[in-house]
Image (cartoon, rainbow, N blue to C red; front, side, top):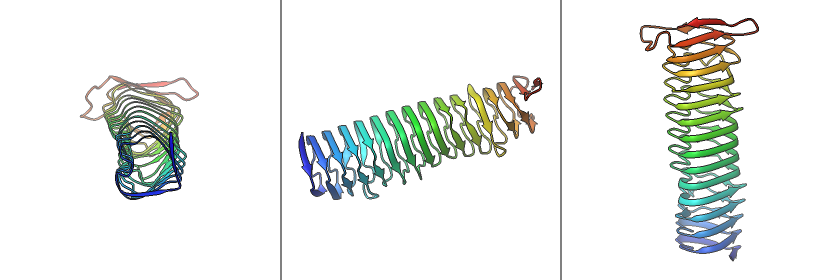
Amino acid sequence: MKIISNQFFEGERPLFATSDIRLENVKFYPGESAVKECNRVEAYRCEFMCKYPFWHNNDASIENCLFTVYSRAAIWYSKNVRMLNTVVEAPKMFREIDGLYLENVKLPNAAECCWNCRNIEFRNVDVKCGDYLFMNSKNIRIDGFRLQGNYSFQDAKNVEIRNARLDSKDAFWNTENVTVYDSVISGEYLGWHSKNLRLVNCTISGTQALCYAKDLVMQNCVMKPDADLCFEYSTLQARINSPVHSVKNPGGGYIVAESIGEIIIDENCKNPGDCRIEVCDEAPCFSYEI
């Protein structure tokens, strides 16, 4: 493997179509497509100020690097990308990636990142301004995750999340086969139109949570007082270890909670009688058939 160290590049395509190189302490000044169409590139302690540096790459390893705000849309149409201990200040990172591993990475300006990606693993990743993160992506595993950004995981499939804190309006819309463990999820309109969404040991806040969901499962979850008007038109199996502020027109299944502040069944309920609601604290459960 050829080592390139302590240099700088600028302009168009300085290392285009290069294979088997290791970049050490290299700076990429304004330009475009610095390492496009490359194979087996290692970048260590590099700084990227150019647009679209890693496009159409195979087997890229990136460690202790900085992608400045000028390196927007940096990694697209690539396979097997591994990034460690790196800061990404640029938006629109990661599109059409097959095989993406991030560990100890910070993305402080992560708008429109990780679109149409697959086979993804995140470990200890911190994301801010991450609107539309993971849209249309699939086969995602996450452990140790902090997200501030709305509309996350829209249309995503086959997702497992552990030990996360998600501050995200409209999270998990139209998703399929998502499981979230031991996490805090804050933001209104959570999980609408989802299929097979499973929440285990999670804390939920935000109005009109989990409506229009199909086959929703909740195990040992807590719902905060602002989580009102929940479960409209949803089919679910929910065991909630807290009071629930209000439930509106659930579609079917059952809800077990410590208490229910209000049960709203109006003329728009589509399946009257198909959902069982039980209040179950220390005393024997009290069941509502609606």
